[in-house]
Image (cartoon, rainbow, N blue to C red; front, side, top):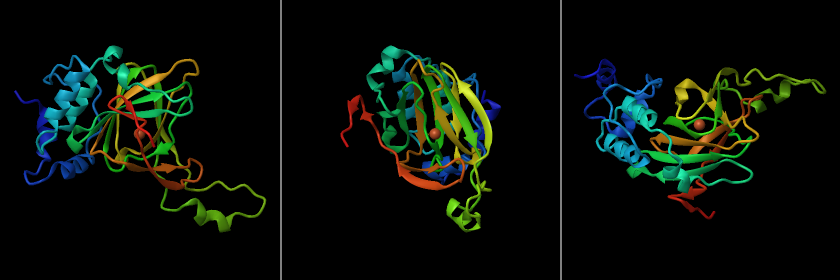
Length: 242
Ligand SMILES: [Fe+2]
C-alpha cells in the first residue's frame, strides 16, 4: 500500500520536470521528517546508505521524504566513516564521501572542540545534517531585509551606536545528538552550526541536493551578506591540496 505522505510527495512531480527543477520546487513545501518512514528500505551500513541514495536519485523523480528516511535510518558506525573523518586544528572540515553522479553531495564534517560555522544560506538546495558523533547546536535566523549595512551608514549620528534594523533574528535553536537528522532549505531561514563542547569533537554527515559550490555568509548584527566558495578538506579520504 502506498503511504499517504508518499503520494503527497509525488503529487508535485510534473512528468516533464527535470530532477534539479523538481528538487528546487519541492523545497517550497518540504519541512523535513523526524522519524523513519514505515515503508522505507532498511539501511544497515554506510555503503547501504550510499547505494540507497544513488537508487533514489537515479531517475528524475526524487522522493525527498525517502531521502530523509534514508538519512534517519542509518545508525552511525565509526568503523565505516572514520577514513573520511579528518580534523583541522583551527576550523571545521568538509570531507567528500560521495559526489552522487552530480545530483547530490554526501560529506562528513568534522568539528573540533568549540568549532562553529558562519551564518549561511544553502543556495536554494536541500540540506540534511545527521549526527555521527557528539553534539551540534543549530541556530536558525531570519533572512535580512533587503537593505545592507552600508545603506545605514549615513544615518548613524557620529559617536552613537546604531542598531541596524536588518539584524538577523533568531527563530529557533536545537541541539542534535547521535543519529539525529536536521533539515533546512532557504525557505526555512539561515543557520549557524556549532559544536557546543569544549572537550569533545563532533562529526556530522551532510547531504546537499542539488550540490552547490558557492553560498552566502551573513553578519548577525548587520545582515550584511557575503558570497563565498565552499571547498573540501578531503575527497574520498584523501586530503585536497589548495
Ligand atoms: Fe548549513
